[in-house]
Image 1 (tube, one colour):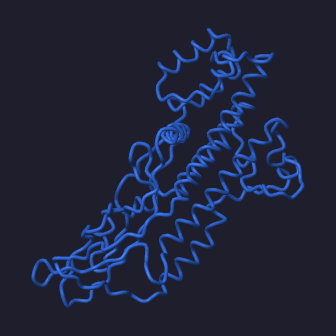
Image 2 (cartoon, helix red, strand yellow; image 1 turned 135 degrees about the horizontal axis):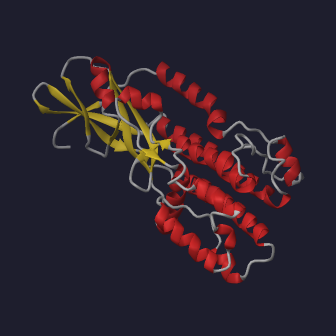
Image 3 (cartoon, one colour; image 1 turned 45 degrees about the vertical axis):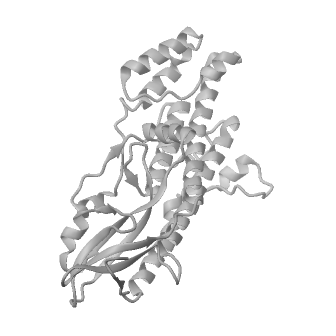
Length: 339
């Protein structure tokens, strides 16, 4: 079975939505990389040394380059397309099982249910059944599939940090169920802007590496003291600022892995489960040409690739890392305590 050819013709547009979400994730990764590298004149952050204690320099943040507004917009767009794709499929299956056009009130009531606990979920589906939407009863095909995807039934989770980074830092990553996470991001985006922030950095001090790294991604603002070093002693300190987003619960995360985790869950598990009752890893192409090339949706699907955004962006990231390692060390300016 070729990727995507199991989708009904009416739902081929869903694959286009997911491809646009993936493209937004790739663009966001490049924006984040560009911000973190800064310019020739100004890095993402600048540091200064202040001697407040005789013989000791406070290495602190002197400035932070503003995060480009497009970063939050790209993240928001990806979330919107993923959530809409799920609802598009849920509506299609509900209408198919209903056997006739849904009434206006029924149309407004149909959406993908996402509940963290069984009791409120039960109250919701029973209310839908009373409105004539019997397909949401767990004994019906759609109802059974929707119930299996609920966060209280599905233990799938996305970590706030990669396992390797969490191990190096000696911390446990915060876990979130991907469908619940997508719901929460979508709901937050309706009421307030999703926050892309530059307020965190990883600090690696070469003469005290384990301690410095164990503090993880440190929150920072102008004036934050990142390290203290002895005056007159060369002390290499590597600072790696990162463009992050905040989960609705406030946990800072890297946007690329976060979007990829939700997108994989939607494309590989949620949508095929709603349509066919099974998961289909790589069943929908991640990378599809969405330009004005004269092709039909079916033709675009047939030529699509399962290589996801974070994989496509990896060579650029690795090249940037090598380039950064080849750069010369910089000496922060020495500032007066009064500044």
